[in-house]
Length: 281
Image (cartoon, helix red, strand yellow):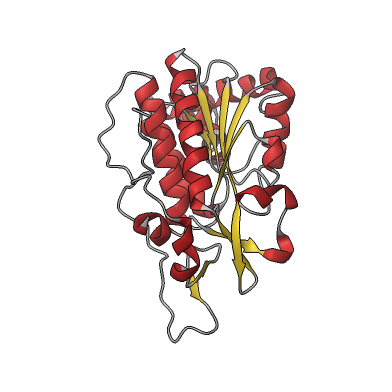
């Protein structure tokens, strides 16, 4: 429980910003901030873990989505670690619902990368300005589509950090019937998600924890070996109010309560840790 608390998983948004549909996952409120029930977090994380492991064991593919600044690094890292796909900058509208057009953009990306690899930019165009234009096009395509350039078809699963921010991605996934897994903060609608995991979707350390844990589920599902340690499920929600000291802002900075006598920063990323999911239960 100490590790979960230290990552700030239990810190929700301001009470005035909440979605009432998150009520079942809220433990209490303090100083205008909702506190998420970690027992519910672990329960839903286990359900998501087991489901994701089963689905990927059947050969289904996962698209990790998280475009907010705090999530970008972990989204890319964990998607690559589990040999899956990711979008961590801007969601290209129609990525799923207009897949045939997106495939053409991916083909263009691969062509430009091949040209870069064999230094053939100069052979294809006549001027330095045209070469610069091609290189800029390449970088733009890499930034947007680099995480899905090897995605041959629409995946069956989407894992989302902050479905409120990734509203368009979630709508497209729902329209096409993808299974949606997501970390839902207190301002989100959990009913839009097949496997919602209540938790802080703003703090860097909390985001990393969720992504590392679900990446482990994918690795296990695809026959790999998980090397990372996990957290214990022995949680005591009764202690949360006593442990509460503040909240993380969007940059990952830990802001103490007004009645606290000091401030501290938690912006740095943590050592790799995950939520305990007991496979023997």
